[in-house]
Length: 392
Image (cartoon, rainbow, N blue to C red; front, top):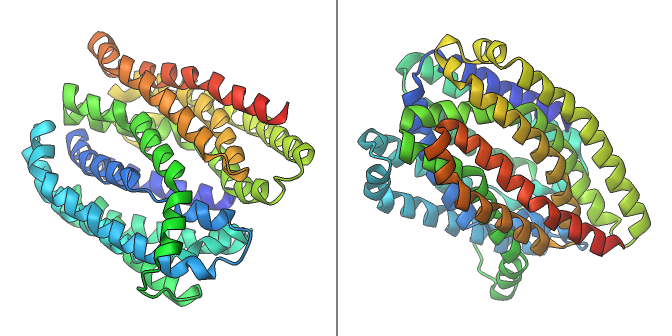
């Protein structure tokens, strides 16, 4: 999993490095608007299918048809909402030039909806070596298409085409590699069980998205698409090494915690060991980003992006804190306490909503970084309380 995250994020970094030298920050900001809208609607309609299938102790094959039906319908719903919302979105961000990319991004959720839900079997069965090749290839396709079309068109649409082609390839591979092959059969009882078990994941997904992107939304609204492009790329770089370390452990430990959840002593020891390793790994990464932001910006994005240096330093602190305390989420998901994840992200989201506008008005783009740190710190006592309550 570490190798997979390294390769996928390395490919993402190469993609950004190439396109940042072809596109101005304002063009990245237009793509950022489309990505924000897509991410928001995917979060609002998150069904928690993958989490439900991994948590199932029995065979998951009987739920594949129901999960696929829900996934397909969700994809078309997201696309329809994006299409109908285009006038509102362009008006909100005062960016009429985002219309074409918003039309294009409608294809992404439709195609993704047809992916075979059985793809979770690699993670559920701890077959991370196979997950490495599968996901690594898909990220390579995304990056290669985006870079190739970016060189030809010099357009931010190339980023969306990378997503579209990678999604299409995944649909094909998911039907070739995984079984059973889903059928479009509506089974009411099973469908309702999938949705009912996933309701907390839906809530957590919504609040998590709002927490992660309220700063993006208000930077784009109050400061414009150029500032949004600068902030988003600084955010990606600052959280790349530190949050990815945490993501590696979270991907691996979630199914393991789910397996050993009945043995509280073993579970607690496993979690604390994992937490210590994450702390030891992310702090050095964070310090490097904090002390050498100009060098990192110049290397990755080029001289045109040096205005992102100050916000990158602030977000480096946020990235370290986020990576450490996100490790609690995989624990609570493993013990089927999705409501804790939802409540924690709700607290963080409320805190972000309260401080983001005044912070941006006072500190400009730096205020968004300060708001991210403050809202994360506010949510930490909630996590610690439920951890103590469960293991006391």
